[in-house]
Length: 224
Image 1 (cartoon, rainbow, N blue to C red):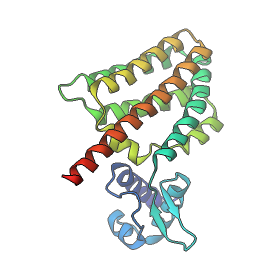
Image 2 (spheres, one colour; image 1 turned 90 degrees about the vertical axis):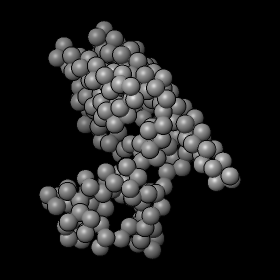
Image 3 (cartoon, one colour; image 1 turned 135 degrees about the vertical axis):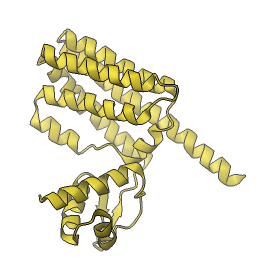
Image 4 (tube, one colour; image 1 turned 60 degrees about the vertical axis):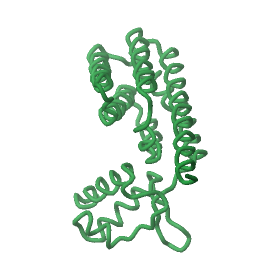
């Protein structure tokens, strides 16, 4: 991939995740080229990568659209993540070094600091959460698991709903991280796997509840 393609990929991906490019919107290569400041060829390459990420879909008529994730789609992704990330957590625990353990603790402290502000820093939480899970994959050292989990990207709809999570829900997520660190410190793979599976499935339930509440609020506002 060229630098121009990488540049276009990062810009388009970030705008999809932020919701600036909403689900269901038709992709127009010329408009994306102007937005990214590159020619249409790098944009086409970027769109192929985004199709692999399941962020863009191409129809039988060769038209492309920003993927629109349903609640069932998100549930499927979380179920797969629970199984795969559980395996990754087991491998990471069994291969844990003292240096990696300190990295996990540092990330946990940064997330706690973000959540300890008068208004929780959700962006900081999301960044730290990604770092925590990415480090698990790094320590696990499984290219196959990394490739499979790489396809289960953070869905745009999830990213937007997380902005409305309660402080308690965010703190519960980081408390799960603290428990996983305890399992990592013991090098207990079975414990780490069980904790990770529970953590991911709890995350889905928190998402689903918040999603339903937001949907109800939107419908109520439309009726008023």
